Length: 311
Length: 263
Image 1 (tube, one colour):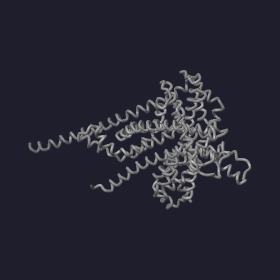
Image 2 (tube, rainbow over the protein chains, first blue to last red; image 1 turned 135 degrees about the horizontal axis):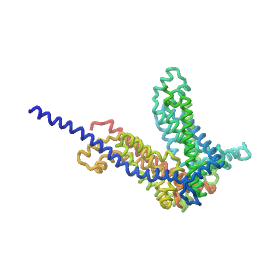
Image 3 (cartoon, rainbow over the protein chains, first blue to last red; image 1 turned 180 degrees about the vertical axis):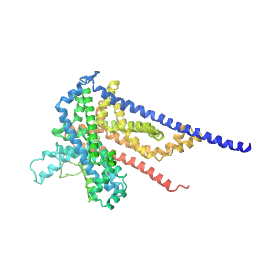
Image 4 (cartoon, chains in turn purple, red; image 1 turned 30 degrees about the vertical axis):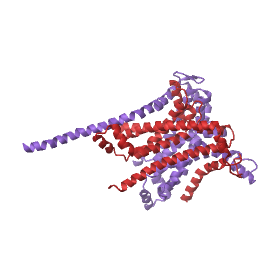
């Protein structure tokens, strides 16, 4: 009897402790959902709902700045049948492609240097600070440097190297892309550094020990292992540069009419919001297509270890 | 080789900005060399300009208000993410990040449609909402990784000892996560100060600092753009430096505490 009595409290305690634990876990999860409510409401009201409204509005019609509810695909049909849209898309895609490629390729050696060659983060922090030096200030800086009366042209003229200012320096594809690359570099650097940090130096050394040269190591080890951060670096930069309309406008000359500007104009000067909404969703669809193509190309080249890589 | 490349890279990043700083002190309106001497005239002109002071005031209001909103909402998010698990957590985390995966243009036009349909006139208030949507994901991202070390059992201990949830948060959680949150809040101000892609669409007649600079660049060659740019640059970098300092100081203290656990 005594022994049973003594053992009883222990059993009760053990039994009790299990349900108490589960209750506290449920409470924790519940408090998590409760805490998530205010930000969730904010995101639903000011992000999800507006995105859906933008989509819905793309099927509406418009009369100068007034939207009229309807269910028509006229905006899509009109956009897709106008050559201006394709012209703008071509310019946007070129801006996106060159900016994303150049920024990623130029930042890659620096990311390598930061992760494997130096232990200090000074370079990374310095680059990030320049990321915060306003976008507009940098656009303006490039205009000052490349302009017809700008630093390069006036210096070259003073030394008698050229008679007339070099027109192609400013208001050209060149000026737009050099400016966009300058703006995006710190961002691509940050993404590439965080990708390389996941690859231990041992892997690179193992590759070298097995006789892999620098190029083989890059191609067979670094790129496949870091492909996620390379893809995000490329895609983020591509989307930001391709949808940009301020830099092309301030530096682009004939190439100013990007799809971004076309969309912005529908909302600001033209006043046909539903048409602009349709264009915005078409642009998003193009971005998805670019993303799928990029992944496909990397997979086909065995640079993105998906399922196929392990087969 | 690679070190040299890195130096050239940094030079490329900073030289154009340095040039603007230099020309902001130029005594002549010319934006080319030779440099004719230093003067403060463009700064004097700027500080005497009604447009500039108005834009500065608006930027301060928007930056302050959106940082406060971002901090409140973002702290809720961070605390929720610490407690959530599984699929809901990943959906919620994705939603928190999603606004900055889209271009600012898209957010701007989507918000403008919402505001016009619910009849909210465009004003500084709509700008504040737009900025909060933009700074909120950055806030959550920068706070999240740093909160992973936070041990929820501290809070549970306080609750077991009879503290109300609010009291446990106030006395235990906040002192621990406070500096991280402060750093991210300051970062939000800096991001708001620079934002104009959304602002262009959601503002009424009000200008902010970037909008003023944009209109100055569009209008004509006005050398006080340089001074305005440098002003904005200094402001942003100072804010970032403070944020960085707050966050590193916190980490230093934590590392010291970890180094001497027995006390």
